[in-house]
View 1 (cartoon, one colour):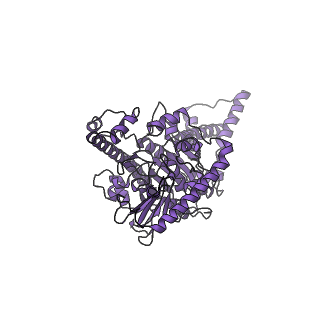
View 2 (cartoon, rainbow, N blue to C red; view 1 turned 45 degrees about the horizontal axis):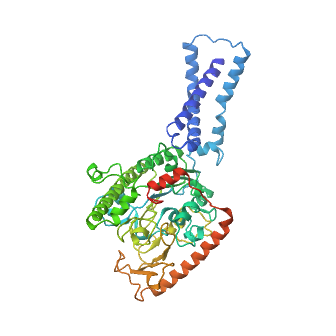
Length: 557
């Protein structure tokens, strides 16, 4: 009997340890806070295997290891009792398998309640991605084979617009279904740059998408990379695990590339194994500085590489030099940007391929979009955050619905990315949609589109915009004359917005609505500012924040 007890202790504890290590070790370096479920599952299975092996172990002990020695010392006996208790402890986890919602059942089922068959919700965003660089939207450059293949299995939205032309405000609207001014993310001042750097944070109310989903039983995680999207600004609200690779980066790294984001995302779901889950993956590529690791050496060698240290020289050459020099620098930037898009697409392809291999693809909702576009001198400017033209507000939007969902391959009417939150809530069967202003994305082509309102420039004098199926109107509320206050474009005849119709009576009703929305937003911003004035700056940039933001082209380049 002692031999059997000793063999039981040995094999049970060994299986417990081996199983726990197997569950923890492979991915703990990336996501240690999510290791518990995998550790429990491994420990339970390892312990059960140890029990099975205890009888042959007892036989081996008897036949191969000689006579049993009597334990005479008290401390040895106490050690044996302690080992027995440790060997028996995992039995409690197996008992919990019989309890609905118990830890044992969750571990073995990967965290999903047996009756919960809701789809996983996956949002993949690609920073500064221009729609016209995707083959699915007409590009012939061959930069995005993986996005194009995904688009063939998804619904492609041909007129999707964000509510702000830069990251912090765009995502806040996307993940709440509200415009920036209703979230305290717009100032009443003429210019916003310093206010956004020092004061802008996501509000605690209304709840973010992740908070609503988590409350309704979804596991929530974010794997992102952008120095603006920090937990200190409120961007981590509702996420059980929120990892910003820029904050996690070490050794002076300016920003994490797509390869890091993909590997960390793969580590997360291999370890997590809980479902249903909401996962937000954000790639910083192809944001400036355009410097993809796979850029051909022949292209990179054409000009001195001064992106991170002397960006002001580049701006001078791209915008104010003589025409020949300016044209060369502008074309170089376009080609470097294209290589960034190609690089991001390659790593996104690896992510999608692994989703398929792991059985996550078919029954998940997968949305791929951008937080804004990028201006490459279309209207004389560069980068983003400073204008309201379509190269900044119009973004790719591809939605792969769960298996069995009926939807058209192309939807042409205008939609706003504020519709993402109600879409995810509908698919996640979340009933509480209090305060949500958008509506689920249409799945059928045709019918009237929405009016999409945009506001909140990062750089330069404030502008607002209103987009419909037919017209785009841009309002400059601080213009010094009525003639400079308006831009009006007929998107049906002039999709690249080159012919301003403000001198005509075109879109008069749309102008009136935009002016009313702008005035209401400014008044709301002033009310927010008054309420916050006594609190002082709501966010302070660290020296590391400043360094990384400068490297990305913000704060004086």
